[in-house]
Length: 236
Picture (tube, rainbow, N blue to C red):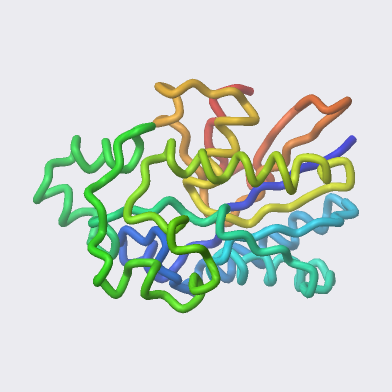
């Protein structure tokens, strides 16, 4: 039996403030650090031999993975970081409060931007300090690859090719990916064959490992380790 473990980073500082975060590189809140440590303890109880560790470029995902590995007494010096696993870019919504935007734009429109398959928010001005072009950690990414805004479809189009090229063939040795709500939604859409209309219903909890078991290269089962905070996977 082979395992792919997906985990959305623990609660971040901007999750706590209810802001659209996207590619802004915010760190974990205290609750997020606790969630990561609890995730590590739960994974430790499975007695799995995990050989590959992937994360986005963003420190909330990197630090979640580091806390998990430290809790499991695994060295964290082999983490593979990929910008392709970054959160979806929220364009002009970046840094804004979600509730305030609901009042300004209407709840339906904000929900459309947050959960639709192919509708991105307006692009973020390149001079904005929150634009990835102005964030130091992205300096080595080709400028033409850096988005001004993204839909979930756009996120899917960078996450899945990276997964197929760099991760898929490693699942036979057990893999953990620490990423974000929308990059994990993209992976779940691909792995569970969720259609474009249903994907809007998929919610990804923070700091709760999703265990996907493979047998003969096919998914046999999938479940969240923390059953009390689990969400419907729409397939099992």
